[in-house]
Image (cartoon, rainbow, N blue to C red; front, side):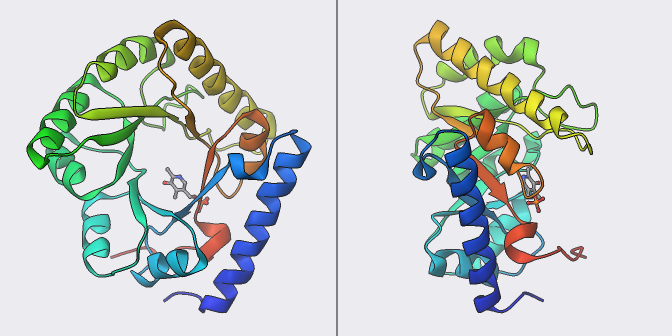
Length: 234
Ligand SMILES: *Cc1c(COP(=O)(O)O)cnc(C)c1O
């Protein structure tokens, strides 16, 4: 089941207005923040809605679901992996996704680099950092980020575009703010040390994108606010 397209449009207009308002409050330009439509648990039509509305990319959190969905639609969007990536799926993910946001180990870096080389492509990636020290979240520890970045920058078939994080679930918005600010500061520090640009900061979801934009997010990943509540996929 999926909501009708006109309802999607109303929701997308609302989200875009929310992003623009958050940008204005933060003294930033609305076009500095991209909107990734999170289509997980929704049918292929969700990607078609995003494309028709003019959104450039969709996010999936499971490799196989994303691969199958992509094969089922001709929607002209980029497909990004935003869920945890297991080693045994690295090759499949490298082949079928346009960017992988969840790289959190040197082992994954090596596997993705090799798979990208075999596929004859340069694969854009983000490094996922557990900036909120959340035991329930994947992502590299903050302390390991410099070494992970150094390793990432030496891979000839990966393009490191920045970082991604997920804030811990909390009723206290200052937790999200602290998490996102930590990631931005890490990026600023490591960009300074390595000379790499690292422009992308993928942070913020339906419930915390305003805090993320205030802290410097360049891409918010929005599912529920665009498509409504997800039904579990069997
Ligand atoms: C599901 C998911 C989102 C979107 O969450 P909503 O709260 O539905 O907007 C964003 N990022 C990741 C990593 C997700 O798994």
